[in-house]
Length: 621
Image (cartoon, rainbow, N blue to C red; front, top):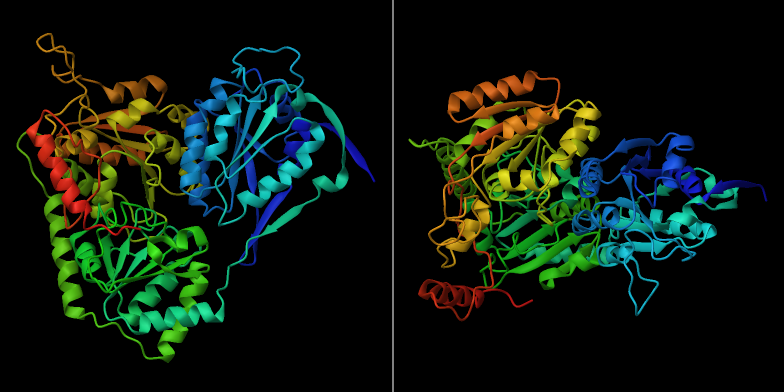
């Protein structure tokens, strides 16, 4: 057997450089490169390997460990999970900074490979700088924190262990069901240790991603269920994108006259103009979709994990005769809401169901005229909100309307947290698939700017807009600098409403007078944050980093700034001052919260009673 003597870190990169995926007849290089921030624990191991033995893997310098993982995740999501970047960090705080982003990737079923540095496997210098010591279990390090948020976790304590660990990592990363964050903890001494690796370990490996085909019996059960239902509705989730099933979804909905409600991950699977697209569904849903959901006797869920937002905390479906058919590659997701399971690739399942139902001449009993009326009424409501004029400033919905009208159909927006995800889910009009990128599985503040960079790396010929609130921007905007460094232009549309207003609104809606969520000075009168609003010049902040920056307080300034930003060649931030409390809410939806059963506020007690009464209507599984 021929061998090659390499350090463990060199061998890992050589292995990653030879990984490919094959899907629908197309072969792609799977690992494109490595994001990294060097420190003790990876600079002399992984750092040396990236400097001298990276092969075709490109190295990108992150500015925050969490941010660079968000960028990698956004890239993988935009590429429909067919290409990834790995991320390397130092030990201790560098590694732990990646944990939140690891959870974000895992919750959203997005593949990212994390390579945190670890303490010495030999233990001889212990305790080293940044080492976490557990007196009861000395095998534990900071990297054990990745275990609950990783779909696969391993620690490479000897260089030869890399071989089985790396292959297992690829198994999980390329599996549509099991994918998520994969963590290989790399002790700093082992990274630099040499081993005679067999040449075969470095051969080109092609991982075949196959469309899961359902059994004949499962298809027949699904056809029988659909055939006896009069008023079905489809919930289109992210699986419609990942399986490239957007055309099949449109055909299925058109052929059988079944309206479609979109989840955050599924939005843009159908054009907003499509006659069967009733808009968003659930807690941030359109009135059209949510009315139809309440009446539905069958819910056909496609590629969705049916979160509390998509189901209005399990109150969206009020028909006592309602049943659920769940099309998903994951049995874990397919069984939710006690669904009849059709464990299959979405595209394949829709093709099979279409053929079988056509043979039976199936048609839903939805009246076309009523569907058109519901859709038109909702379009008028969106138009009204997009035209919202205020004498004292800009409303959030008007700003979003102007942006929606301005950008091109193939431009991409990204968002993740605050009040904008609800407004965008309800109001944003998309015509092209994959132009709406919302991280709402974890709704992780700080994803937006980093995510925009990842999307731009994936779609270099398209304009990418990060829609972000002031609170989320302050949490993390460090990868703006990376976008400048890599000459990947993104446009940040920052809607400044003076704080965490989404949560402020939620708080006030449950009986509070408002506490701790607005960006105000501390008041000497009550020693609380009830003074004047902070005044922050975010455009100046962006300019100080090397980006272009524009400040907006009027509609004309907004239009001018959007035009200027489009013509810029470097990353640009538009600081848009908007009025607090000018977001959307309601529309036949509900979201369950834990409201205190005991309080010295009568308003809170009343909110608790209302919440408990509504919770009684929810499905119990």
